[in-house]
Amino acid sequence: MQREGSPWRGLGVVTQKELSDHLSSARMLVIQLLVVVTGVVIVLVSLQQIRDITAEDPFLLLRVFTRSGEQLSFVFVMTLLVPLLAIGLGFDLVNSEHNQRTLSRILSQPIYRDALLFGKFLAGLATIAISLTAMWMVVIGLALSALGVPPNGEELARAALMLVVTIAYAGVWLALAMLFSVLFRSPATAALCALGLWLFVSILWPLLSGHLVNVLFPPSATTADALLNSLSMHQAFRRLSPGALFAEIVTVLLDPAMRSTQQSQLAAMGLALVEPGSIPGAPLPLLESVLIIWPQMVGLIGGSIVLFVIGYVVFQRQEVRA
Amino acid sequence: MSNLVIEAQNLTKRYDGVPVVKGISFSVAQGEIFGLLGPNGAGKTTTILMMLGLTEISDGRVRVLGYDPVREPLQVKRRVGYLPDAVGFYDHLTAAENLRYTGRLIGLRRDECESKMRTALDHVGLHDVTDRRVSTFSRGMRQRLGIAEILLKEAQIAILDEPTSGLDPQATIELLEIIRNLKNHNVSVLLSSHLLDRVQSVCDRVALFSQGNIALIGSVPELGRQVIGDSFDLDVEGEGSGLDAKLKAVPGVTLVETVGLNHWRLKTDRDVRADVAAAVVGSGGKLLRLSLEAPTLEAIYTRYFRNEREGSRHAA
Ligand SMILES: Nc1ncnc2c1ncn2[C@@H]1O[C@H](COP(=O)(O)OP(=O)(O)OP(=O)(O)O)[C@@H](O)[C@H]1O
Ligand SMILES: [Mg+2]
Image (cartoon, rainbow over all chains, first blue to last red; front, side):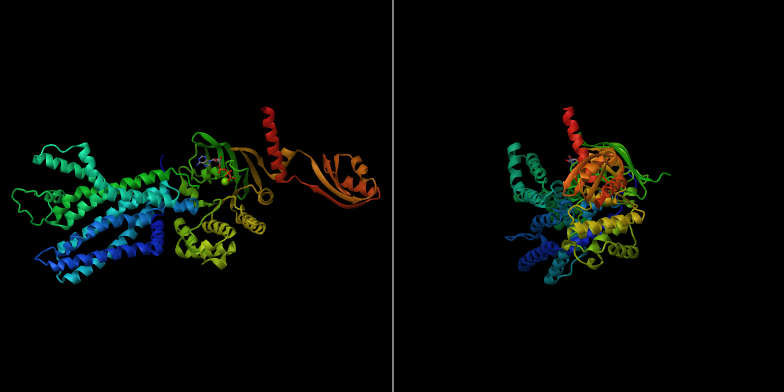
């Protein structure tokens, strides 16, 4: 059956209202502070280390983000913190409309539910984008002034791509938080479930998945093929966590020498991928790095679309009254 | 072109196969105030939600201003104002900000919205609190803000779900006055309620809901005749000796009930006020009061549901 009128009627109005709600809320202020302060602290620490070992590195700026040493790396902290940011914004997007009893009044205005839900998602994502961009600019500014070397275009492009990927990663968690806010009437339940899943996926799953693979597919031969196979299997399981996808993408983006997402695991075993006709450790052009992680990027974006669509379907069939 | 703004035919709603609205049909004319009355859970809110396209219709059809709320919900929602029961607003926004949001959702231009908003808030008496957060509003103020939203929309039909529930008597009277005013602006009103005597005073016609069916439909006097029959109650007060017997002797009086000292209630089969007055005065007594009591909606309602219960007990 054909519905009359555009499903997106009112989308702009809803997005604007939600965005201004977010930007003026105390919760947003706290989250924003948390993100910026953490980002700055970590970068300051890694700047300290980098200055100690200043080398003739053409990608000095990028090292600021990946440097870990005994400290936490910027990338690792973002993997943990960004979901928290998204859950903090998304866990009460829909159920608060039920609880404030505004839903039936708003839906009796000439808009479809599509516009309401999508507007909320867009506004949430825009809010996250604003916080992350602000932090990114502070961090880049700090790093540039501390390092004292002008950045080259490719470095900046890679850093900017990292920002985009981080926003996409936040999108997955925002869609998940919003799904929970559709499923559960109580914001507390929605928040707890989302946080529980976040804890499981980012902390327990990386530990568990390795054991799970070893149990399901016991390592047998020690040929190169078998080794690569089991490595791929581990990777496939780990990738069920969006954090793993994000980490893979960012590692390749920020290290132009990375030729494969398995490289670091191989290196940990003292092995290296050798491609005929290429110099190991030589930097790849940006486009090639992007091609390597293209599937992971599609995976992240696809994941958020799937989560959003599930939430959308449930929301469409939900009764408006509390 | 008919002047019916709402037409429902065989409208049915089932939740998980259980019917809660069972094939009701009714219509509301242009400029009419129509009441949906019935006990809790009778299906009033469900009927309203179906008319707005906010819940699926299981069977039957409804036309609102000629539009089908299932296929053309935007057309319907553009022209119909809805005040949900226990209406909610965004607490962290002011009254004006809440209405501005609605205005933009409707698609009003900014200046147009501001001027209409001012008129609407004036009309419901909220002009002093436009810039206060809704979190500080009382129940009655929220209801009135909801009506202001309908005015802002310049709706042709106002659908009000229990607009007076939870309001004190004064606030109720004020709200009913506002509702009457809607009618003067040529807005058709459909309202649901269980506050019967109040509803009676504003409704042109009512539909009595009972377990998902419309049991009775019509104006209050019509319903009175249907349910209670053609009996008139007279309230008589007077002084004089042996008035009892005199009253009993008046032709048309079927029953004389003593309410108190010099105070009787007569059941009659026609309007015999003139004869009663003549009888009292003719016997040398003093007539202090003589009034005809029309059946109230309350009486109709209680009588109807009592009859129905007894009917079902007999059937069982
Ligand atoms: N989502 C739902 N699932 C199943 N049954 C429902 C649902 N919503 C309402 N009902 C049932 O539908 C019936 C009619 O409810 P409705 O809210 O329309 O009654 P009402 O006349 O508005 O009552 P009230 O005067 O209490 O507001 C009730 O028996 C209720 O239990
Ligand atoms: Mg109701």
